[in-house]
Length: 142
Image (cartoon, rainbow, N blue to C red; front, side, top):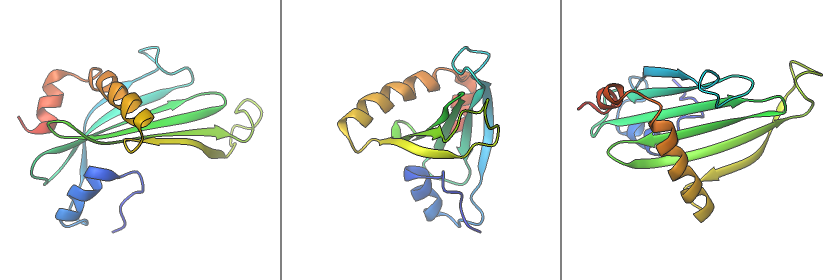
């Protein structure tokens, strides 16, 4: 079984410690970002628990859609933030012109740069606060 490309960093490392075919991402909670006025053309943030990892590893994936592009935030965490990535895509033509427009990666940030650490650490706290405390505790197995 080939793992999806969006499984990155600490989650990917944790999955390598287990049998990749047996490792699963389990959805704990989904938040509609449009209802929270965080995404103009739709979007959602999903909290996942990575099964069979010790210590517990969780993941937040937030996708924002816009008329001219989309952004995807991915955060891997346990007791603290382990890895994070922001990928921003721009559509070759606006969606109102071509609803099936292809997207191109226009920017990628990771924790490897100072800008990435500052921005992604702040973004992680913002997205983490969207989820119920009980679901975060469940995600981490506490």
